[in-house]
Amino acid sequence: MERFDPSKPEEEQWTLQLYKGRIPDDSDRRAWKKRKARELRRRERPLGEIIDFERAALFSETSESWIYRVPIKPGASRRLPSEKFFVLLQIHKERTEITRVSVRTEERFRLSGLSGLAMRLDRAEFDAEFQVIDPQYAAQPKTITADGAVRIAWLFRAGGRAEVAWSNFERVKPYRDRYDVKVGDVKALDF
Image (cartoon, rainbow, N blue to C red; front, side):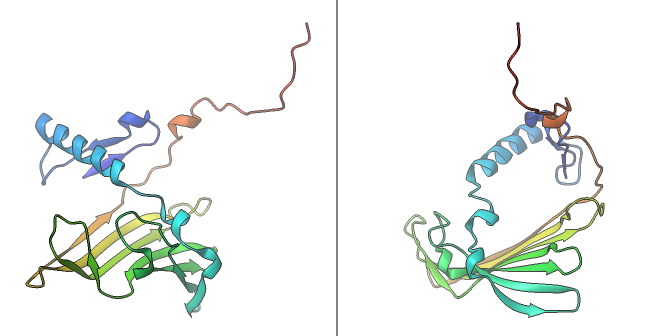
């Protein structure tokens, strides 16, 4: 279990609360910090930068929301072929904000560059659900689930599922906004 507090300086915003169901010791915290730093370095561009909104098409509609199918821009990822994936965006009609984002594979495809192993991605699914905490602000993440399966050397199957959940929200002032400085018009000093 991790805690994120944007009211603290950037290097102190993430803290480890529980590790494998217990209070973490110093070695657990060091290993977690290394893994967290590696995770941040591996991140690619945000989804909003790589999806092609110009080619979005209405996929389905309910009384409360629209669901748009949106392709991913070519060359968006260094590791995966973007043309093999698509995004479904669920938009709440009344609030006009995203309530769910789903990324899916179009079809099975071969993965290359993985230590010479022949691998095929059979399925990859990613879902992010958002919830309204305070109606004055945009919806916040509630859960993210990832599910996938691969075939290794055409003989072995591997796969798994992961889920991340957010809870215990509290409104705080972000660290970068702590001084309440308002930028006004630039004026020359008159001496």
